[in-house]
Structure formats: structure tokens, C-alpha cells
Image (cartoon, rainbow, N blue to C red; front, side, top):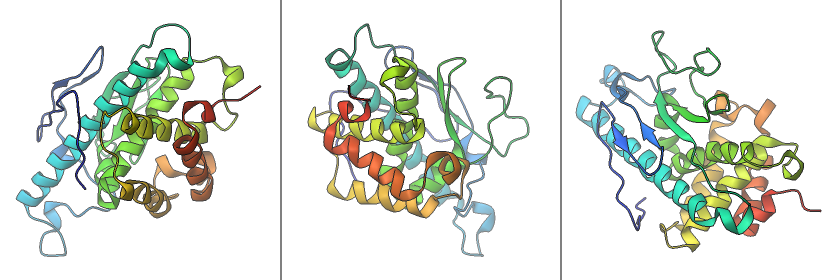
Amino acid sequence: MSRTIRSFAAAGTVGALAILLSGCISLPPIDLTDATPISTPTPEDEGQGGITDEEFEALVAEVVNEIDEAVAVTDAFWAANWSEYFTGDYVAPNVVGLYDGTDPNETVTCNGEVPEAGNAFYCGLDDSLVWDAGLMLDAYTEGDAIIWFIVAHEWGHAIQARLDPSILWAADELEADCFSAAALYGADADGLMDWDPGDSAEIANGITALSDETAWTSVEDHGDPFDRIDAFNDGRQGGVNACLVQE
């Protein structure tokens, strides 16, 4: 599904990633071509329902481009709208970006621990965002909008860390889902990008399809698909204020 991004250009490369976006946001080099998706066929599976090296390389390029654009748009929304809802200055989180949870030599850590495969998270210790390459490749097979949802959701956790706890939901994962919708639909309303009608269905279907299959979609801590879709709809319909505790 195509999406028109306005006001800036997002770039992606295959294999080693090295891009610099606005503010302190940066993605360091990482070799995504060796990442192991959770279910997406890899070139090694060719002849058994897999894909060729060229097809896999093209898939990687598409996923990287979606991540780049989602990061840029989500940051642009919060930068442009922060003062409408909150006091103080908006400070973007540090986007560490992709890691390979299947690599025993992975150097991305939070509190000294390497994140597990199939996860995406906000690390409050260094105000950073990361997402597993396998998770993102798998998510893309459910629809490109899922990539945007994951990025905006983790950004939502960074937003939570900047706010007074008294205005935050007790269910922080569901609130991050709400913030993700507020940012994505808000960006669409601001003319930062065009959010297609089918994108919402992709997110709903993706949440259901991936539910409890990855660390990022564990029902135990994220809520079941119905909970997540409801929270997403709160942000879609009510914007940022719908994601906050109201007096």
C-alpha cells in the first residue's frame, strides 16, 4: 500500500543502514539481511516455498523504507503538536532502531540485557527505541501499516516517560496503542502523510494475526486483540486527549 509522505524525504538502504533524521534521532549501521524473521521465508528456504535472494533483498528494502518513514512522520507529529497538549519542550527519543534478536553477538542492550527476538520496546534508561528485525519483517507480511503502528506504539512509551504519571492510564501498553493512533491519524490530519482507509484494517488484522506469537504481542502484558483495537480506536477518534486520564 502506497503512502504519500510530505515535508521531508525518508531514505532507506539495504544491508547496512546509516540514516540521520531530525534532532537526535539516528539509526546506526546494522546488517538486516542476516536477520531471521519469525515466519517470513528466507532465501535459504528457496525450493520449499521460500523466496530468492533478490526477492528477499527487495523485501528488506521495503521494510527499511517503511520504518524510516514511520520514524520521521511520528517524530514530526509530536514535535508539531506537543505544545498544544503539554508544557515544556518536546525532546525526541533516541531511535537505536533495528536489532537481531537471533544473533548471540547482538550489541543492542537495555539495562545490560539483550532484548529477545520478536520484540520492540522503549528503554527508559537511555530513552531509546528498538525493534527486532524479524518482528518487522513478519509484521510487514500482514501489511505495511503494522510497521507504522509498532513505531508509533513504542514512541507512545517515550511520550509516557515525559508526562506526569497522574495523567497516564494504569494499562500503559494499551495507552501506547492509543498514542500510536493519535499520532498516526493526527499526522494525517496535519497533512504530514496520507493514511489510507485500509491501513486501519491492516492494523486490526495484524494485531489479531500476531497476537501472543511474539514478545511484542503477548496478551499477558499487552492485552488481547480486542483490548488493543479498542485502545487504538480511542486515539483514532479522540486524539491525544483521549489517551490521558481526564479529571
